[in-house]
Figure 1 (cartoon, rainbow, N blue to C red):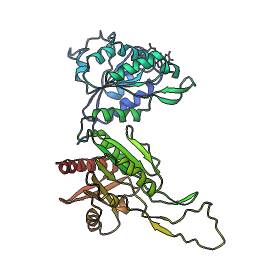
Figure 2: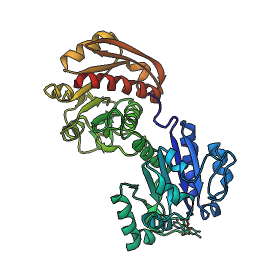
Figure 3: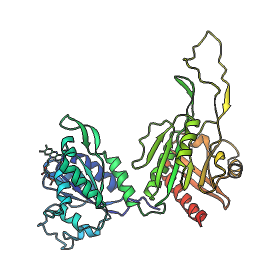
Figure 4: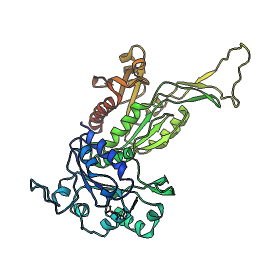
Length: 400
Ligand SMILES: Cc1cc2nc3c(=O)[nH]c(=O)nc-3n(C[C@H](O)[C@H](O)[C@H](O)COP(=O)(O)O)c2cc1C
């Protein structure tokens, strides 16, 4: 399956807010991912950013004037909305939100929104007082009741230096929301997918821990892909520096025990578990309350006890499609096949621990009761997309 953005027609309505400059980045990212992005600028928007910027980034003529008839005579004010897969209004001004709520059609953007069957996503950006105003709140409520997706603005420092709720969400968040909307009827629509990612950290004392090299990249990429295929995703993550994918519910944990607790909560009513986290097999029997001091040349012996085998503990959950990971340094295939049976999994994804953990690329060997499939070494994002497609195929077979 292709990237969800490839070939999609996105109408991007840009309004008169300082946040308009950020949307240039969004237009670029969507275009690079393969979407056809047609930008409609309101007259006020052109006071903030030049049309040439959007035209250069999207490779498409920027639209705005309803009276400027196109040379080919085909794109009329109604066809734009009719052909779109998604309409995005970002930044959405208070003025624009009011106009759309009132059903006005006095320029190209309002007309297009009235005339479209496509989902509409609005990203408000305004002064916190304008956002909190009763009129704006009522307009937002009207739009939501009509099925429009109106994002909550972020809290923080505004361009005019006041602090409050009114900032437009950052472009990567908007892209995540766009992907989720485009994928809403995908093969995982209506499914709850739980994914664990990253490594656990088992404390030795208040400042030290036993950890591993897992970066979380693979699990985060799997979560983004599952979202793009329509799933509701819960990502349970060990400590990482990564930005979580938008629209995914993130639960941060530290230790294996915390991961197990978070998982048992998340798995209530879930359809699928992808256990990608590198969970520590052992933890210190006791955590020192104080930082352990060095004393002369004396060494330090840690007594480790086994952590629970989280996925093996779920062997009784036959209602969930369970995918395990096996990072091995030797006898990869035999070990993976053994784990598949012993832990009651539906599928196991084996990889070479040395060549993959913490590395940007990965080769995968998929093992299930039907046989073995090899995915070539590739960047983790691409590997995650290919892997999730393989998982979805098996999940659909498993369900019947
Ligand atoms: C410097 C400046 C910044 C503005 N920023 C915002 C803003 O962030 N959000 C908003 O709703 N209006 C903002 N406005 C007001 C809008 O530009 C104004 O309401 C305009 O009519 C909106 O037109 P449009 O909705 O057709 O784009 C700003 C105005 C100025 C002069």
